[in-house]
Image (cartoon, rainbow, N blue to C red; front, side, top):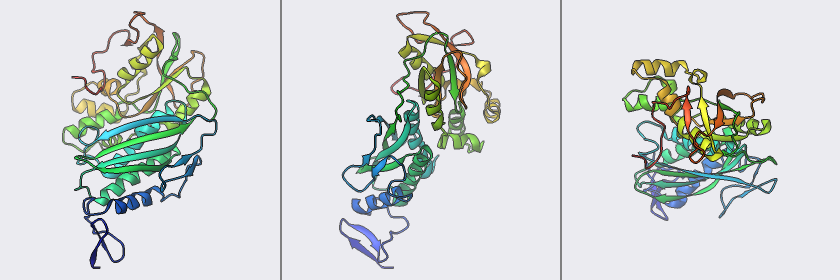
Length: 345
């Protein structure tokens, strides 16, 4: 087909398709947005029940049945949160959607909708953007949500900013500030897998594939957040930066300390094997690694824990009432690194 110039300088052929290697710099913003919207509406204009009006207008309309909306936002920057030589575009889409939907689940809520803002270099291929959105839409659907809108802009590197909305379905939110002495500390989901996958990739390898895939596409236990809320969890949050850091955040918010039993932490076979190959303690990844987006909860000691939560420790009174938030492992301060924090040197 003969290519033609359309308003805005984009190159389409007579059938309306783009050249295979077309970049966002080759097309008009209108064309790029149309391509993105086609992906977002591929499962129907509003496949999540809460969505009344999806993408296409100046704003979306999302139902809030009990008059309250849970809101979170997260930003992923190329070179800091992901690398395009390590992950396919569809994997990055899954990853950034999972981070936001996990935050909604960590309030005991159900994700309903996402809005996505993209910053893109002109050299970014349109097909790459479509695959990114395919991953975002697919992961949102896993959590029960839809992508309902967003924005695009030119940028020096790829930036993906996602905001997610959710519903409590009439329940009270579960905060990270409710842990009380005597409570059981429990985890739902995997720990250490994404960190182990990052270690593998950083060494120039692509296997064990299970660990690399865990870094590329986390698997948050979305439904476990609702189950924790229904079971009466006192505190709840997701483990995005590492068990030690995030348990410390829960402890400080609650004015308590937390004791973790290392024998209760599950060391899955792929992690054990990779750690042995690198002569590392697997607890370095399990305690210090983030990006799995497991859920961390505090339950009353007589609670029958909902699946898939497993107990890993307990809450104790703060040893220093003026500076609560200490996390001890097997009764002492852990020797492994404490996890990831931006701006920490």
